[in-house]
Length: 522
Image 1 (tube, one colour):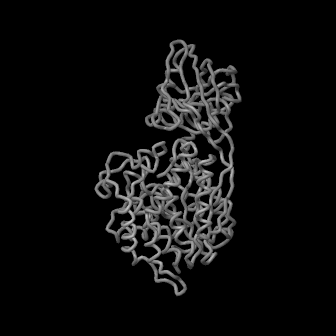
Image 2 (cartoon, rainbow, N blue to C red):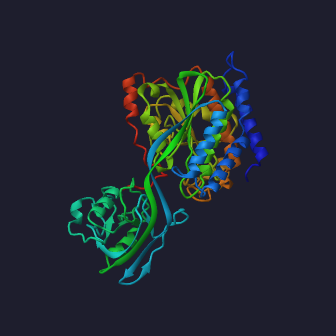
Image 3 (cartoon, rainbow, N blue to C red):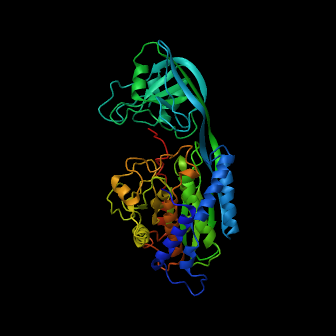
């Protein structure tokens, strides 16, 4: 059962009071005491920001996705709060590939025997027999199917098929036909571009057929370079279309696929050592199908309230609050930001804290595993990441509140900072993953169900927020921000001692395009 608003506010204040031993003594010129600052940052105020983000989505087609009016309004709201709080606010522009499926697509066989296939709707509420590829073009085509170098039965291992990967695969392709290609070896973009160059009127990409590669293919072409309909289908549907002589299909898609401009919001405090920057970030954009109030209004609203309360407080180190755009398309905002830093400016960032989904309805309290003590997935973060993890552990331990680790798997905006050698950490309450019985024992909720059943859906509204998780994480975020704002000894040694080292690290971004929010590319 969710806590009431009053219970949530009380929980945040109580949490702050309990963690006072974590906080340093106030500097002589600091007024008020840092411990008291934490107590002023409560989840009820965060909830007001979430209500505003919900209102913005409601007024703008129920979305706050990058490149839409809903994101522009979210950007302006956040920037306004930060300016009022005294921050120097920068709107960092960058271009990105925008995509929206405007209507549910159609795929039907018209000959030799008519058959209609079930679509996957744009809101992702269900998975059908086929799905429109992200960055597909628009079109309404009825044409014969032409098999392109299919491997049927499939090879023994994934990516055995090279279907559509070479222009030569389309040497005798009849212009105006619909190309049926198979997953494997190269990206979906390469397959679709080769088909388009050969004169195909549409493309159907079937899954490859090995275990784990049989379901309906939901993928992305990566960027808007293909202007004909492209859909993904299950292996079974592809096999059916490939095995019938004289197959004719009707494919219809309606999409917007183009390059647009969006903005990161970067806010620097007026106080503190400019050579010691404590950077805190969350992505502000939602997916197109929904308002994104948990993902990631929750993280954005939490750090926004922390920023608002700290803006007038003289701190020892500079605080930088970052609200990333186009995260849902592959961490594009944070990638652009880190890549744009000079070596000297990168070296000033002493740590990065990331908060992406901190109020999932069936939550677990997850702390990023900075020291790889869980021995799962990615290795430890840069030196100092272990210290950040320990601070969050101490916070929850002080509250006698259970917590678990979560891997630096590249699914959120810490990725580019880790690549650049910046110590990183943060909190996460779970997305589409399934809660374990052990987590149910620690946090309540329901094992065997998703942490957030509304993940990337229209139902990710303010009703999707778990107030207890929001309160606990708001206290943790506030505590970490204040600890590091006043710390004389920030986490870890500086592993980026020279401009040359920092520049090489900044150039190494780009390895985290697969967010989990991003669809399969090959």
